[in-house]
Length: 283
Image (cartoon, rainbow, N blue to C red):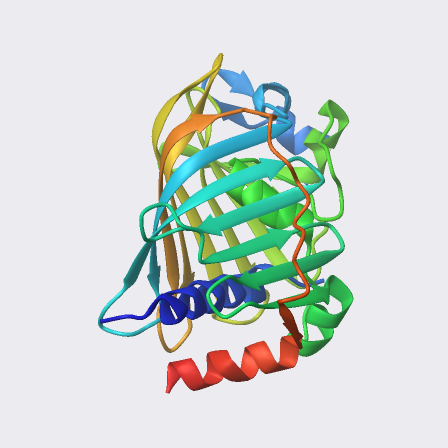
């Protein structure tokens, strides 16, 4: 039987594993010659960008299943809250709604709180990037969860960004690929009929490693649609790591506090200590 702390450690481990894989640091004529869903490539790309909602807030209840390559996945109940450009919060509450762990991701840092053992980790993205030997990008993580296409290093897309993607038909869908990426290939697969994002694939150039994010079970959210299931998994690794989120009560509520305040009873541990715990967890 998993202890509450083991559940929290598994949750943090799979999050860091996926973050490690996700992060790092053709011409307009060809777009015109491509036809998708009865539109020219330029028209289709501009519609995809135009129709991508820039939601300022997203909230949901989440049933999260974590697979760390072991025979038995771990499931937890959590609350997901996002405020665009400011914070991504995942609150883990597997027992009677009582929070046992919290992860706050902001553009500058990651805060991991262990409620059960009264300790926390606070690390800047520069420190995390150094320890993981890769660049960590808040905007990419945000876009993955918000069901959005993106350009690395750019916070919001505009219609003029259409030319920064190549566009090709792909088995009834459209494949959008970022042109100028150096170390990572960014591919987005959208519906040919309505432009909704159905899959994001990021792969390391010249390497077998990739991360896939698949969106299914769309439901209405205000005047648009949003996936009720987000499945993120790695490929090309010796073990398959995955995070499967089934969302409910999806909304855009802005009435929630973004700050996390901890009392003096909480002990700060280093990010290195956290990584050591996670290594021990895998054994």
